[in-house]
Length: 220
Image (cartoon, rainbow, N blue to C red; front, side, top):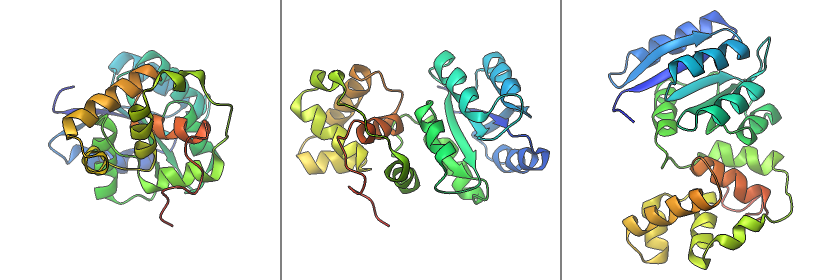
């Protein structure tokens, strides 16, 4: 990925798209390359532009943001989607994470938080924020243990649990008395073995498979 992060804005409210565009284009490393007023247009523009990050409103006409996210993440594995929602604990936002989104943001996010979230989403090593973990704790749907978990080594399983607790690579390295480079290798192998896109998807996976209980690692 180049040092400049390309962004697609998908929201049916023109003023929100305009406001976000002004904030993001004001950063040297961020560029808004396109806009979409509905989910169908978002999918079409994403396929055409192949942006690094899509800011996706969860509720849009023609095609909702969840289905648009599902289509984009399935077709463009290198594109990260951030779900935009009005309420913090929103089951639609959780469904967006299930569909492959890498994060969610409230629409009243501050400019520094918006910029930081876009940069974090573009970075596959980004740590899941507390808000995401709270969302998973609220709406996480446990399912039977995935047989793919058996492919993980004991240490990889421990690292996955630590990732789900929101620990950074440096924090995991200190916890297990290994180098940060070793942790990065473990993380890469975990994502590959479990067919996951990024760390946030790893957190979703850990909650849904019961590897992490809903209240574990949460700071309310």
